[in-house]
Length: 214
Image (cartoon, rainbow, N blue to C red; front, side):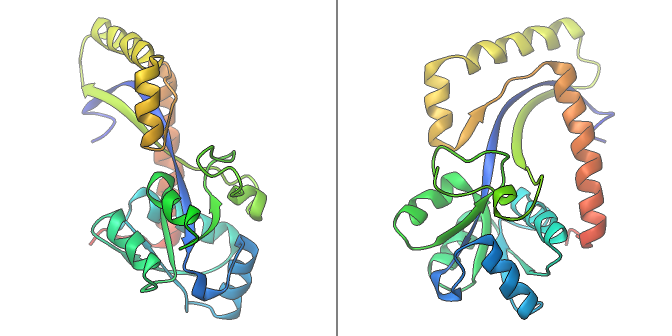
């Protein structure tokens, strides 16, 4: 049990997701995708790193907000899903921006939008989903540290302070940038609240989209 068995320490950073398409499907914007999906319900598919992964649930939330249905194709990892879009085997993939940015810059895939609330510095010309027609949509995949339950509070506090210190180092920030992660250290209390709110938020999406782990 995630709430019973672990003690939150702190948040490390956020990673942005991106939706990209193979040029052959002739969509260049999120609005184009919505129009095509409504014209051909259930005909389009998107790949992700696997069932219930960040790319999967983020895309299901987007589809729920836009009122469209796109079939999910789970892969065993984000790399094979992305490569199948690059080669035209499937039309769409929801993945992390760090993985897809090089293919977007080469023109081998079309970026339809990023999931975060603001444009990503790796691809500043790519609009957010909110800008593209999904108002108030904002999703990032966070990383954080947790300890075993009942870890003494003094240790939790010390580790949280250490996180903030390490996240402020230029070497850490540079390394995170290559991974597409924005450092975002937080207090232990804020991190605990984030875990709880995400549990409730994504629980609703899982139920609405009928997501089941196979």
